[in-house]
Image 1 (cartoon, one colour):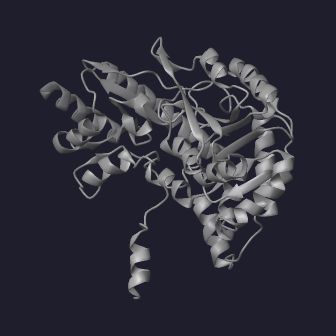
Image 2: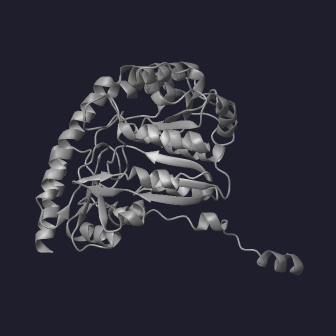
Image 3: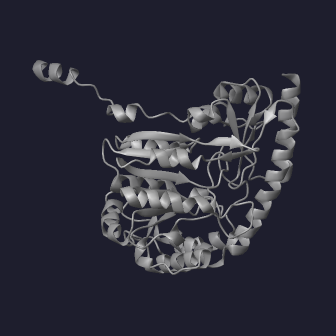
Length: 398
């Protein structure tokens, strides 16, 4: 190499831009790496069922693959899938949805990134409630947005959002608010009566209201789903719902999601999808159609399993000395803490070593989760029971 050219090259490093370097590394992964390869660990750190995707969904994908559905599809998803999704949403929310407002994505997290890329600019103020799934917090940061966190509180043994605190954060200079309800990791679920005030504030200041809804069907109270903003909003205002097939249909490994968009954003979203992934896999879209059309019994079965697991988990945790375990209203997680624990990463690693159970550290979900632990209880009862026994023995020795 020319000496002058070599000198020029050495003046510049080969690292990512500062905003990317500043992203939090996954503490869930940090803990999981300690025990992932060990067969003696009961693993509760990731958010998925321990049962596979229902057979009828797998069969639909296998048929499509056998039929040679391996080609590119429409950027926004196959028309027949978008039509099936529109019919599903109508059954769920009691109103018609234009299939042209729907976009199929390569996973729910992909939907969140696509939305952020479409509406968030560098320097924008974005509001997020926390504790929160790390992706919701870090995605706006990748786009150089400025984040304001509104922390959830606890009252009467449950997690709660102080509505006034959120409304105060939604100022005229706010570009977007991201809401995840039911919430990962806490299970907090937005009360139906709070929707109108939030929507009114967003309308007043032109704030994008973006909801992350993967657990909307996995609620522990009555009704088909958690309260949604979709029935309250028009078809062309700044309200976006992102969702996934991962949770309610036990399809975590399939990496398929969707968005409900305002009409005016659809064309631009198709372009953004083109420059990210082009389209979702054709044969997997066939599996999603089967899930939407025939999946209600499977969702009902999962809800019943999770409700029983939640009761099993919260009851056992609360019986352990020094354990605080607020009641989740939806989702598949117990978010709890042990008296005296402040470093949840170190504690989670110690649980791997001494109790042979793998939990997600609460600090992975932001400073608001420091000292807490998340346990995914979407498992067979005997698996959860074995884990609880190990935790109880560990705490008794501690």
